[in-house]
Structures are given as structure tokens and as C-alpha cells.
Length: 586
Image 1 (tube, rainbow, N blue to C red):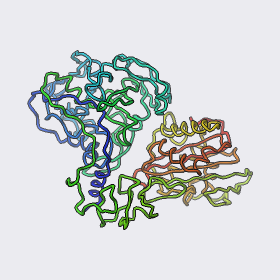
Image 2 (tube, rainbow, N blue to C red):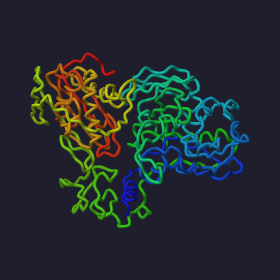
Image 3 (cartoon, rainbow, N blue to C red):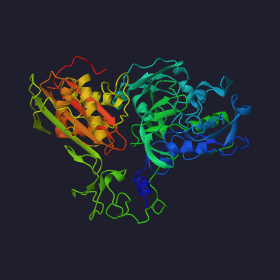
Image 4 (cartoon, rainbow, N blue to C red):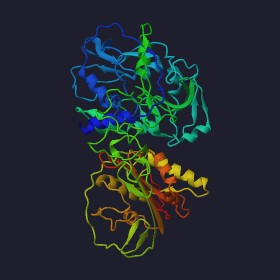
């Protein structure tokens, strides 16, 4: 059996029962148009993001749905040949081929229309400059279709001209069905802020940080006949279009149970964030395709077509490994060797392990395999690691100053050592307003907020963001990811300009010199894509916690770099010091 196939099957067994899909379900039917032949470009477009979900290789929202709910159809559009174009409806959107003579390999050969704009405005587009007026859609955007209180598309209409929120402001506004917005300060506990500012003609809005992180994220996609790790979308706005309103919290019913949900509508889709959902399914795309079809063809006969959320396959389904499930792992179906598996082949952590443990997933024999975290040590088995370092610095005018650190060796660097290194990392975090190494990305800024709130709770002064410490931290995260290692000590050969391997050497090389004490926390792991995940782990580790709550530290630098294909994927470095470089990070 190929390892790729094995991983696919394992991931299917590892998926836990998910919450019911947020997207409201509407009734659908065909339009009665004669059906053109299916275009392979539709299948190729669907497969990139949704085949991994369908095959259990990824646990995230559908971007189209399990399958189209109509045959390929023809709809009128003025700019299409003979005024008719091929379309096909999916739960989440509609695929379109307007100009069939264009390059079929182009990302934009298949488009998905500005369906949300049409639903909100009540203007059905039938040409680049021609619209047919209709009432704005009174269809629930999210939650149960019969929820009498949840917002509908028409609720958004008067919010499109509201100004953008200030940068990094917590989102604490709640939207009602009648379009009324009220402030609810308790929503700040969710920690969601307004981030990326989009200004194009007719649009001036900020995107909620949780949605921007999803729109710019990497993950498992299907392309060129295989699963690969790549950007989910060719560019951030490919699937959604631009935001047509700010993000708002609302309360919707899901299976009759009220839930807090963050909602933001874009030209093409509406996205939701549900904190109570399981990881991977907190961000969901609404069933815009279903809703639009209902709005455009209100008289079509129909049957409900929900978008299912993946569940644990029933026993005896074809996804059972041919060799059966090894009894050493009662909570997950893992076949016995061969081949030998390790934790990086699984999509589940903290699994129950019974002896004899043929895959050696529980090397410490504590009955739990693939633990999610091992503080102050490196675990290569489950691709997660954290470590901490503190040190003191004795300033001197020579280049041979001595640093000490609990996690690094004492050294006396020489000023003539200038080895070079080739770095291959390709950072994927997207800072706002400046260079990646100097400025904090959305997740890095969230970590700063979390640490400062934690310090405030313990009666300590907040840390300020330092340009030079940001550089030191970012360089180390990039180096660890690019050269695939995890340590406080920079691997040899050292990068140009760095005279020693320790955290203090990196801080000095970044130009931060007016300090007498410093500390560093690092973490790396496939599950460390977010600031909250890293903060929670460090807070629960006494050594890391002591660094975050060190009363002498006044400044911090934070560096997150994601390096696809490396052992740990996500690499975090935070450098703390008691100096003042008198310049904010950005």
C-alpha cells in the first residue's frame, strides 16, 4: 500500500464527530435549461480545495460542497458567446465559464460570481453592466433555515457604507436580523480583531483576523493528480472577493441551539467563525450557492441538500485498512505494521496506547501516544516542541563578551568568524504595513496581546514591541524552518553578521545592545499555527511561564514562520529583554 493512501485512510478514521454545519440549508432544483456537457475545468477547480476534504485528507470547511447539486446549465450573460454561459451550482457557490476561448489552465478560466453582492443588493447580474432588480434575499445567512432571529442577506444591505474599523480593534458588535448593530463588550473575550484593510473603488472595510488567516493559509490541496501542501487559494481574494461589510457577531441557532457566530460577507461568499466548533471547522463558508439558486429560481421544485460535515466512518466501510485495526490503539484505527508509522503520519494526538505498541507511538510507556506537547525538550515523533532560555549579559566594548543561558552553552565568540549559510525557508505569515522581519503579523500581534493581558492579570507592566527584537526572533524562526532543526542555538555555519549561536548573539546581531538581561521561548509544531495554541502551551509550562512573567523585561520581539515540508511546519521565537530600542516594531 502506498503511504499516501495509508495517510488518507488514517486521517479519515481520526476525524472526530464534528458540529452540525453552520450554513443554512435551502431547497434546490434544476432550472429546466438544456444541459451542456460537463467541463473538466469544473472538476479540477472543485478538486483543489474539496477533494482533500471529501477523501479525509483535510479537516476544514468545504469551499464548494461534496458535489454539484445541478447538472451543468446555461444562463444568460451578455458578454458570453451568444449571450449564454455554462454554469453549475454547488452548495457553497456557482462555477461559471463565461469565455470558453480563454486559457483553460488559467486560475480565472472558471469563476464564481458575485453572488453575495446580488443577494444583498437585490440586483441580479446578467451582464457586466446589466442587472435585473429583485428584492434583497430574506434567506438566513447561517444557522438553521427556520431560525426566526438570525440575520438574512437583506440585513447586510445598510451596513455596506459603514466605515472600516480602526486597525487591530477588538470586534465587539452584534448584528440583529433587522440590521441593527449593538455593542457587546463581552465579545472581546473571543480575541478577534479587525485587521487587513481593503480599499478599492466602492469598498473600504477591514477583514477579521480569523478570516484573513484562513484566506491566506496553506494546507492540503489536490493538484496535478496528487495531494500537495500549498496555498489554499491562488490569491487571498480568489474565493471570497472583497469584503462588502465589516465583520459582526450574531446569534444563530444550529440544530435549535443558539450559538455566538462571527459573520463577514464578501462579494462572493460569506464566512463564519464559530468558537465552539472543533478545530478545523471553526471557519466555514456559507451555503451561498444554495441560497442564490433559491433566490434566482424561487419556483423550482426542490428537495433539501445540506452540506454534511465529515464524521467518523462506520465500522466495515471501505476505508477500513485491509490489515484491520491494531488492538494496541483502541481510540483510532491504525493498521499493524508494515509499514511502520510515526505520529507525523497521524492527524490525532494524545491517543490511548496499549502494549505491545508495535508502531512505538508511546516511547515513554505512559499509556498516551503522540502527546501534543513536551515542554523544554524536543519531540520529533509528533512534530511538536518547545524550549525556553534565559540569560544575562555583561556589556563590554569588545566582541568577546560572555553570555550565559540555562539552555545554551557559555561561549566566547571571536570577531573574525563570519561563516555563511544558505537559508531555504519561505515564510508564509503576512504582516501588515511593512517588512516581515520588523513588523508583527496578525498571529504575532495576537500573541503580544495575550502575553500583555496575562502580565496585566499578574500586576506586571506590558511589554512593548521592539523592531530589533522582532528581527532577531524572526530570523531564528526562519532559520529553524529553512534548515529544519529546533534549538535555541543557531546551527553552524552561522548566518553572516552573527558572532555566536546563542539567543543573545542573535539579539546583538539585530542591533539591540542596550540591555542587561534577556530570555527566549521557542516552539514548533504542526498544531502551532495560532498564537492561542502557543500561548496556552507556554502558560502551562513553568519555565516558559516564568519568562513571560519576568518583571524585569520591558520589550519583546516575536517571529512566526511557517515552512511547508519541514519537520514542524510552524516555528515560533519570542525574544524578551530589559532594554529600550526607542522604536516600535512598525
